Length: 234
Image 1: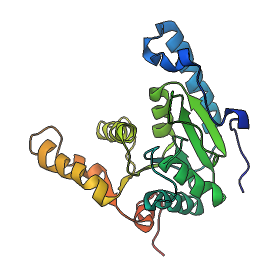
Image 2: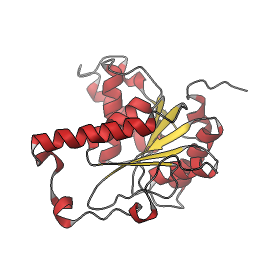
Image 3: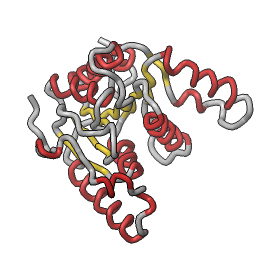
């Protein structure tokens, strides 16, 4: 089993914010405080993640995905396959689909990274991490995802997963980051979104003809792995 590189202690695994802090909207705080806190989050995150030294795949997905479901087990399988292929796995560090991918990587002896977010509910660092980092701000967290990922895999998810997905698509589209595989897992889940992008956004001229090709929809672990950087068919 891979030893932790940097992680929260047991007493920090389940984050309980004080009521006043949990209720405080992060971007309403004074600008000087926001700047100092964001700078500190970037500095600490970069210090830790610069040490990973492995190709890394970001896996996004819902915190509400229940353990034991087919969706959860698919995430475990993806995390395990990525670790077996020599990739580190980086997720939002929380429960659900994030935990599933971390669990697969961790139990298969891989580097399993979680970049958590302080929220008043639903979010805590899962126990399957070799590297654990906490963020106050979504924007500092997303920078870490895109800076350190060589590919992105998106399991079924909600607003947060859509935010992370479209952040990555926008950055690739505008050439702010190098192109990378962006893989959506679950034709049944993502098919409606894909149909709307191709059938409404594209014909109305809101995106360019090549933009829907920035992502690929698949259903299986093998299909995910076939799209990963450096993959060779045996």
